[in-house]
Each structure stands twice: as C-alpha cells, then as structure tokens.
Length: 383
Image 1 (cartoon, rainbow, N blue to C red):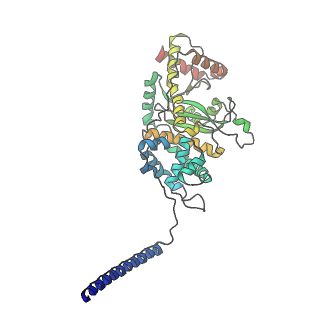
Image 2 (cartoon, rainbow, N blue to C red; image 1 turned 45 degrees about the vertical axis):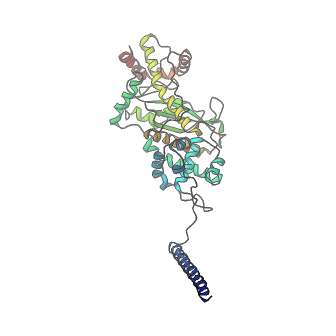
Image 3 (cartoon, rainbow, N blue to C red; image 1 turned 180 degrees about the horizontal axis):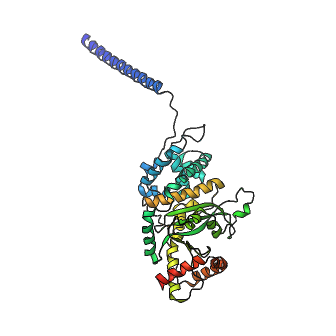
C-alpha cells in the first residue's frame, strides 16, 4: 500500500513540475514578444492583400484582368511607387503602393464599376476613385519616357518597316484622331465637347509606328474640334515644319496636304495614282489598328468615361503609356482584338476619301509644296 501511494505521489509531482515548467516558458515568451513591440513602437495595422494577384493568379488570369504581364506590372510599380502616398487619407488603414497600382490598372483595363473594384480589394468606392486619379497621373508622368519618336539612329529602320507594308517611302508615322466618349462635362460651354455623332467626347490625336506603338498623343481637345485644327496647333506640326523630324506622316483626307503630311488623292487618274492611293490606305491603316488595339486592351476608353474631365485626360494618356509598355514587353494582345484592313479597291472607302478631300480641296491647293512632293513620290515609286 505504501509503495502504491508513493508511485501515485511521484506521478502527481512529475505532472505538476512539467506544468510549472510550461507556464514558465510561456511567460518568458510573452515577455520577449512585449519587449519586441516596445522596441519597435506601435505598429499601425496595414491592409493586407488577401489574395495577392502576383501569387494567386496564373499569368493568363493576371493578363485578362490587368492587360499587362506580371513582369511588366512589377516594372511599372518600381517606376511609380515612390510617387504614390502610403495612404490617401488619414482615416482607416494605409494601402500598399503596389495595391494602389493594381486598383488603377484594374479600372483602366476593364472599365468596371468602381464599387465592384472596391469590393474586390476591400476598400471604399471613394478611395478607388481617388486612387484611379493618382495612379493615372503617375503613369501619365512617364509619357516623355515611353511616348516619343525614335532617335535619329532608328528613324531609318522605321521608314524601312513602313515601306515593307505597302511600298510607301519616307514614312515616320501615321496620324489620325479618335473620339473618347465622356459624360456631360462640367464646363462653362459643355456643347463644345459634343462630337459630330452627337455624343460628348474628347477628340484624341495620335501618331503611331509600324508596330502599332504610339509616338505622340494629344488628349486635351473637345469633341467638336476638327482633326486638322488639332494638328495645325500641335507642337508636332512645328517640329515637322522645322525639319527636326526627318520624314513625313500619312493622314486621311481630313488633313490638309503638306510637305510633311501626305493625304490620298482626289479622283486618282492612271495606274500610278491608283497604286499610290492603295499603298497610302494600307500603310495608314496602322493607326486605325493601333486605336482598335488601344481601346480593346484598355476597355475604359471604349466605354463612356464617368470620371472628372481632369482624371479622364490623365487616364487617356496613362492608357497610351501602358499600351507602349505592353508592346515593349511583348505582352500578348487580347483575344477579342480584330485587325481590320481596309480594302483599297472598296468603292465605299474611295467614296469617303473623295468626299472628305473635296471639302479640304482649298487647303490642298494652297499648299503647293505638299502637292509637288506627293506627285514626286508617285513618279518615282508608283509610276
């Protein structure tokens, strides 16, 4: 009996010692954790990325939602994260810069309702609105780096690439305008933004290269502005007149014929002039394809923009920067992009050209140098 009691007491004492040792270790652990908190100070809670797209999504899923590859997006974040605030307000939790960029990209890429985007990233709709404006401005500030004409060493290569399309010589870019629909603007004269098709818009001018990259963009003119008026009042026009950019652009018949800007012929006569028009249309089709790719890749441009006028301009320029960035990183084009080539033998297309050019005929005749240069190209390359 005594031996049994001794064994029971032994077990009880052993369990009691183990429990005391465990509680001692736990108290030491809590003491160390409290010391660490005291040394580092009070750490403010930060919004965590519950489902980090860089890890949770495949490359295809990421591309579908943001229109850029993961590598391209990380490069973009590295370029602009220092310009973004740690938090866009003094309330709530700070949002990491990479999440701010993804919010902005999600809106520009999809044009989705901002409330839906706010639910996706667990922030307020007002925060998404402010974030889109700041991210678009930060991306647009990269315009000088990504949207520019090639340097002198690459101009020859660009001319060669354009010439391989349909044999048109000396081309350094194709110019055109496109309308980006907007809500009724808060402007003293909102009707100046109404386009000829009846909706409010910005008339955006762009010059593209042979690989559909953008060399120049102007996104400040209202929808009622004529294409030729935008061109004549742009800095690009002055640079071309001064010979800073060696070569000429191709434009449709909405532009006047200039020595640096060639347009199609009215009612061409002879095989040489017909071949010139066919080559002109096929080569200039690059800018139409660039606009189509830009609006398909960044769907907010293909919808009616409901942001403020200031933010809308920033978003348009930001989309152009992202477009060139995607081309530089060889990001795959969206599956729903269709490249349409205009048939130079299409009577309807020729009829539109003639109608537009007849309206601009006085401007063409006033610029004798442009007409002479066009005739010289026809004699040397298309006769």
